[in-house]
Length: 360
Ligand code: NAD
Ligand code: ZN
Image 1 (spheres, protein in one colour):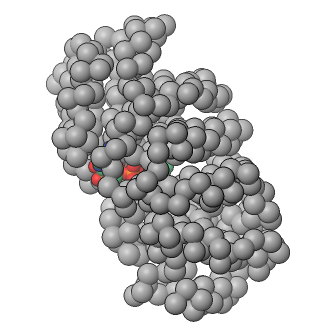
Image 2: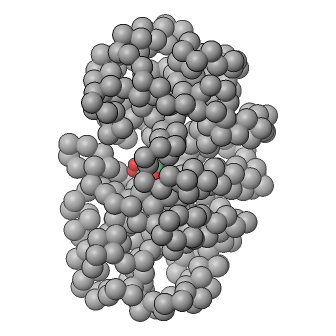
């Protein structure tokens, strides 16, 4: 499968499928402007499972590798500097290519390295998580600051995305769950039919077959691609991609990163946003049925015990996307029809209380 992503600066392909990695070599050889050298940035876990296969299928030279810590630990200033040091030591130049091989954390890091090394060199994303169907497309790259996640970053679109589903086989179930929440998000904000297809088709996260995965990842990427092609720099509708993220980010931050995965927090945020949507916009949607589906897939469906609503509210006010301290939520008028709505604090608190009570 191939999806093309259109942005103001360039159009690039996303190749999706089992064995897609075999196309990387051709993509590189067909590049208009030849590459001089290559550096793959990956994390320890992905390296252990798949780096040999990566080298075998790509056989690129000269190829340097940089292995960074797994997860959010990859997105620090120290690791960033380390990558730049490797790039300099290995004499990468303006025509070198950085290949990010891993999940969203590695992709964000490697993309940020590529965006700043010598004022920007080319890079290709080779995602290895379900979540990365979202993060590898769209050109947002970043590392974290001790005071805030993704606060230091850039917009830097990849030359291509090569998404080989074979790499996903080693993904632990909670990471599958994390990524799948973004697939659900993509369906809810833009395509009712796709949402109902998912709900009928995906009844367990460890028994998904390749053709189901191929379908929902392709669809998810198409949706993300069409949103960002209309709004590359997030001045308007790109904000809809934030559905479920206002509360989701707050839960992630309050619980402590790594305690709940991104997508698992987002799933709770989606449920809450749906509740708000029925209250404030008269959304006609069977939340109970949705909630039971999420539960059967192993998701938590309420705010984790021990987190205070007031603290979560404070977090939501600090969100990058909040303007002047007011909290803007992506809600749904209908499935597939999102809207950006400012919600008053007291309405939020009341609804959070109700949400927790009903979740118990
Ligand atoms: P990740 O890269 O941390 O991967 C999750 C875990 O899975 C890691 O421990 C990793 O080592 C492991 N892993 C990865 N591939 C594996 C495989 N094939 N087999 C076994 N284990 C594997 O994170 P993620 O969940 O993919 O993405 C989350 C990150 O993405 C966050 O940092 C978030 O900020 C970022 N993100 C960015 C965007 C964007 O638009 N740039 C969008 C959403 C999320
Ligand atoms: Zn997300």
